[in-house]
Length: 288
Image (cartoon, rainbow, N blue to C red):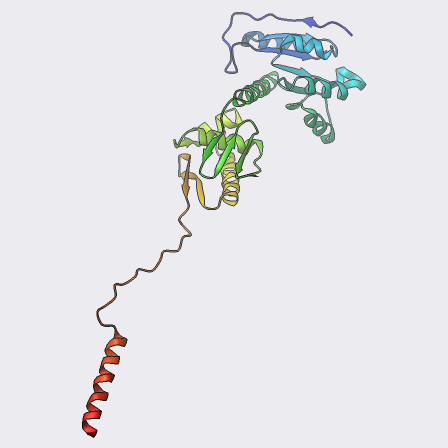
């Protein structure tokens, strides 16, 4: 196999929001695309290298990469086998497939093998960089959450290490996005989070005007929590602002008992009985 060629070393430029030390490899042979992409990477201050062919997985491990961009067309018949082997050997590596036209079945296959994202050529380098940043950001969040203890709120236990929430021994069955949402809201410790902040931190970029994704996902999450833990209310809406997570017992369906009136000294039945007894006495006297 051909040894990798290197391109661009890490210059002294400001780092991006993903962190100060980013190492990226591009397994690609499109010289024009690589040249444009390389210039942008240099401006970002990312260390990067170009791989001319499928280098051994052990070599990729030694590079200590944060992410890799792969054009499956470069790999030929061994593409799927190599992708699967790479993803299995480096579960912490962000993998973005950036290749030519593909079918839905191919994209699904690649994502299920472990690729984090799939981009179709031709594409804009800025979009590829944004997707790389998002992938690395999610990976770093996952690494950080492995050491975090569970969050217990009402009847719900939020397990960051499993990307899931539980009520007792039953899973709430959250999608990854729903879990990221409940984790963010619960971590705010009762503070109201604005929709824009939620979108930025969960989706990873600024919310477009009129986008209702946050509301849609909050509704889905709320429905699942209500089904799993019907006696509690967890997510509270602050109209025009955002949402607050605060577990509170749900008393809306409780039946309010009727007030008990104090017993009167003489009830209606007692008065009737007394009157009947008096009348009987007068009748006996009259007959004597």
